[in-house]
Structure formats: C-alpha cells, structure tokens
Length: 334
Image (tube, rainbow, N blue to C red; front, side, top):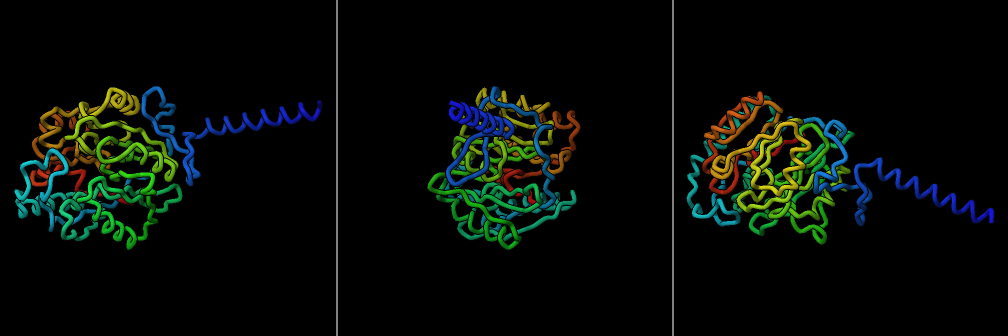
C-alpha cells in the first residue's frame, strides 16, 4: 500500500511540473522533428501576453535590394498584374528603384545590392524569398521561402546564395510538410520585439507558421487574409513601431482585426482607394519614425504625421503594375 501511495504521489507531482512548465512557456504545440515549443494565436481570447512582456530584438540596420534589370510583368499571378503584361516602362522603373535606394543610404542604412536574374522578373520584390532574423546570441540566420507560384520558385536559390556568401545560417522548411511560405511578404516582425505577425490564405499556409514558430521559438499572431488584392500581409499591414501600425481593415477577418487592436495602441487605417491603387499599407518604417510610402497617399500621410511620423513619398507606379511597392522592394537585415 505504501509503495502504491508513493507511486501515485510521484506521478501527480511529475504531471503538475510538466503542466506548470507548459504555462511558463509562450506555447505548447510540439511538432515532429522540432524540439522548440510553439504558439500560434488565432483569436484575441488566446492572447495571454502584452508587447512589453516579449523579449526585445534589435532593429535591422542593413538593407538588401535587387536591381530591376529584368523586371517586367510577364505573367498574371495577382489581380494587379492584369492588363499590365509587357507594359512596364523599364527606364522609369530603374529611376524609381534608384530613388528608393538613395533614401536608405541617406537614412544611414548599410545598403546592399545584388544583381537580378534573367527569367526572374519579380525578384526585385526581395521581401518575399526569405525571413531573416537575429537570435538572442546575435547569430544571423534566415529561413528560406517556399514560393506559392511556380513562376517565382527560382528566385529563392539566387537569394539563398547571397545569404550564404554573407555568412548567414540557412534554415529550410520541410517541403513535404509545408507547401507555401513567402517570407517577409507574409511574416512580419513586430518592431523591436520577438513576435511575428503571419498572414495566410493566399501565398503562405497556416501550417508554415507552426514550423516557423518552432524553428524560431517565437510566437506568431496569425492573420487570415480575405481579399486576393491583398494577397500578402505586407500589402495591408505595416508595423510602424512598437505602438503603431498601418493597415487596410477590409483585408482581414473580424478576429484578425481584434488581435491587431489588442496589441497595438494606435491603428491607422488606409482608405480603400489609397490601399488598392496606391499600396498605402505597403509602406515601410525601418527606424520607427521615418515612413517611406508611395506618393499621393494624402489621407494616410496626414494620419501618419498626426501620429508623429515623418513621411517620405516615392513613386513606385511601375512596380505597382506587378503588385508591389515600397515594402516589397527591399529586405531589412542584421
């Protein structure tokens, strides 16, 4: 009898310890072949943290851009490309790209440029092929994308080769388990915090975030996208800094909007015209104070200034023909 009581107490204490450990971690989902704990948040009722609770992460100081030498609209894989095949003004596109490049240099970022690849016209949108990060020991790593459309799959190898040359540790998702993940087109870091906002529904899958969260030991707030004009999260969501975000609300479900409002103190909303025609939410705020945005976003720009941001307008009309603007055209790096 004494032995039975001892065994029972030992079992209960072990069970309590395991459950307590799970509560102390951000999440409790275990994946095959991945030892890290993961957590995917899909509704506001699940959110059990505040932004200040999360580990800090330094903001990136480097920028990668890909020359638009081979940029064109050669196919239609999003609604914005329709009627624009073969209609890119390549000289104008080069001028637009150079003006944006110069801005990052003026703001003091370390600007890195790589050549485009013939046959990969969309490689200029270099936010899509990878998800770079720096771990808590300041090691630079990157998760490579698994592009959704066959037309863009060849871009990943070229971008990966650049990372290898730069000394990044390369991580890959298992293609037998994850079929779609388009890097920072859909996975966006919260400014200076170890939290990912993950868009899914068109180019990236929910399954991808289970694996990404496990690889990074980082929570993911998963936002379902519901309008194919906003096929990437970066077309409708711009994390400005820790407290402010710019979004187009109609691109999200009610559950997604609730989570955004829960975790950001100030949510700036783009109008339908500026979001769709001017890609207002495809802006970028690399330093938490200067916003680079497509020119002509009058309403959004006033809201940004009212919130204390400096606004810098750029023409990206030629790139909008292919479904991308300021955010898409660069990758922020450590």
